[in-house]
Image (cartoon, rainbow, N blue to C red; front, top):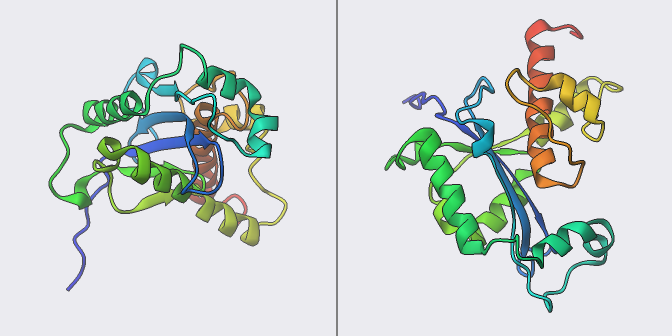
Length: 209
């Protein structure tokens, strides 16, 4: 018996920054979400994208790497502009419902979480963002899978995620690159969209085949 083919209603481009790589100890610092269809067309206006800093208590420990590299983000998380986890969860769930409609009872018809190395983001979402998580398909779209294959198949043609001009050049029409840089969740979801579009265009044209 063949599996029913169900079109993905949306890709939920999601990324997070957090205090530690230890999922049991980690606290969220930032979450970002943009919603597209499977052809990478936006399903909501740019102004509806989410880019939220999460409240962080003064006594919550952070890893040495985070303290050194994300100091500005930590400061925002300890400022009045940060939101609670509950508020972030509510706003993420609201955007999903706005983009794709009420949550389907059939998990196969729910939107797919998308991004780079998205399993870590998914693990933290399952732990800390229950309203958002229950709206997700059980599968992920992890661009890192294509990254590994592409770099093995075509050495020397890696996608330059850390290079804003490369990201900007490969973003689909209607999606503009924000001014922030790498290790910012909102920048990173744009970089993931651009990277998937890069592989998609290369594979469709077979320009390196």
